Figure 1 (tube, rainbow, N blue to C red):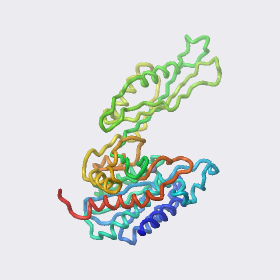
Figure 2 (cartoon, rainbow, N blue to C red):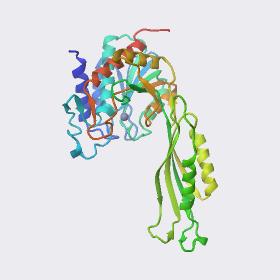
Figure 3 (tube, protein in one colour):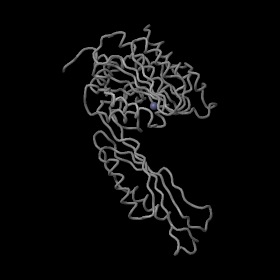
Length: 384
Ligand SMILES: [Zn+2]
């Protein structure tokens, strides 16, 4: 039996046992560093604020291939609901169980083992390979991948290709990969009115009435119909607040929080302009706060996409479906530097849920696929 199987599973278990709830790394990055440093990787801790980041690179030449991921996990919720304790990393019934098993300590273990296998097999490889890990992906911290990428680009270490080992697959490893994501932008709108008695509304100004009209108009609009690669852009209200707690008082204020997930047919700027237009039609006395959480990105073609499709097909029998569905990911901080980005990882049906788990078979499969992709890109200097 190959040595890969116990190694990658044991590494995933060691990572799961470290209770690295966002933004705590809990020693996960140190563990990865201890494995890569003896193989000749130059490792750099890049802490910013409360966030731990690790940059480990083998080689100094270009092109630069980067595996990206995160060590942090979401909280387990009620521990008694779990079949096995969430940080015990139990192996049973063909699965490795625990918080982070799929999102994304399994992928992290597989990426690390693939790097180990690759540099052992091809020590004088072309270009460079690297691992970029943060401890604050789940909170979308600006001190995580976003900040590390800024430092790397400023220091002349812009990656050429990046695989983000997030759980992208649906039923089996490699059936789906992501080659882009929609953008996300959140608005916090606060309207001010004039408080008064509901029986004497003439001197009052009800901000709830204005707010309801604004939200209804935004909700009614068809923003776009999407395109070949992106689903249509969507608007969702996530919070509404108003009222003073009495049934006979028009409140002085009303607020709402709403979010857009959008494709390239929109932009953060056009959405802000449209929202401002609609708001202005109903209210002048207001404040709008905007959180521009991530722009849409997509890798439509390139050697990484080709290599991923070919390798997944040769290992599983069919090519992955490339999709831009789902939420945001740290790919949004990597792609804008001109990097080809693909997200490819284990199955995602239990992520963030109770009884999160990864199929034991998925781990060595991922190691084999990841290793073969790097080999295709960097074993020889292909000029085709
Ligand atoms: Zn994740």
